[in-house]
Image 1 (cartoon, rainbow, N blue to C red):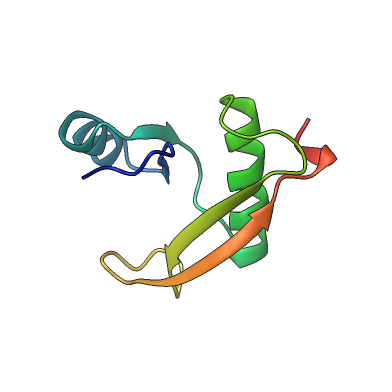
Image 2 (image 1 turned 180 degrees about the vertical axis):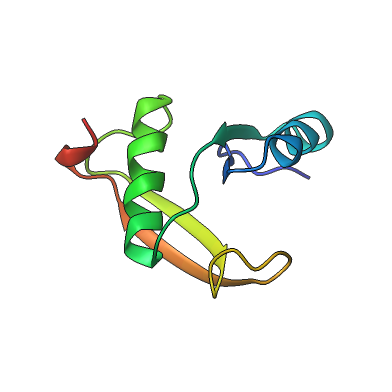
Length: 87
């Protein structure tokens, strides 16, 4: 069963975005790789705001594999707040 909240996928790989959007109905956004965890959270907040999924002051959940760029290694969960800088 799918969650009630939208799932946004950030990926630099177009084939991955297409596959996930088709198979799972996820909202995929092509973006450059994040440089570190802070960049990843900031980028996720900005994109969630830009795509209309979050407003300033709301929380989003970010998952990733650490070290970044390691396929199949999702082992990090972080709650991030969408700030006014997202606008």
